[in-house]
Length: 154
Image (cartoon, rainbow, N blue to C red; front, side, top):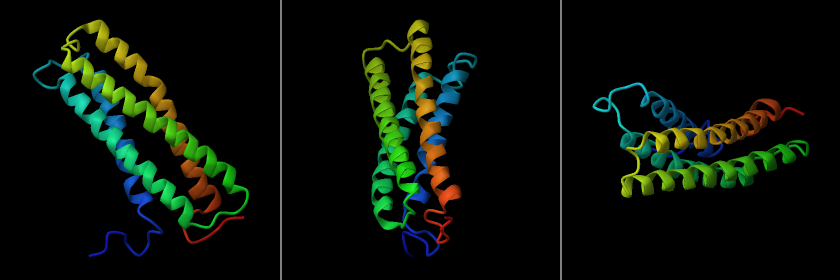
């Protein structure tokens, strides 16, 4: 069994959707913790989701840097690729630091304070924008320029 299917130009398109889904799920669960009883869902589980999202975002970023070297791009797509890579790096740094912040607040037992949880939720919102911009530029590469599809659009 091969790690990369024949239809995939590299492993990046297979890995990249996992951190997107996990991070969005973490934000959704973060929001729902304000309304759900703690016995159903608590902040620790959400922090674990953010940690998994951050680690998988690192993997997606790394596979993306490898993918950039393995596919042919028309000259107009190079600037989009650079924007995609820049936003991806900002996203990785943001969620990596955010996950470490949440872990440290759990370590020092500060997550029980409502003000801390509300503040953390407000802090994570720009990260969703970073994630959106990264995905938007990635989608432009695939659907606008045909990157990695085997059919280049000029």
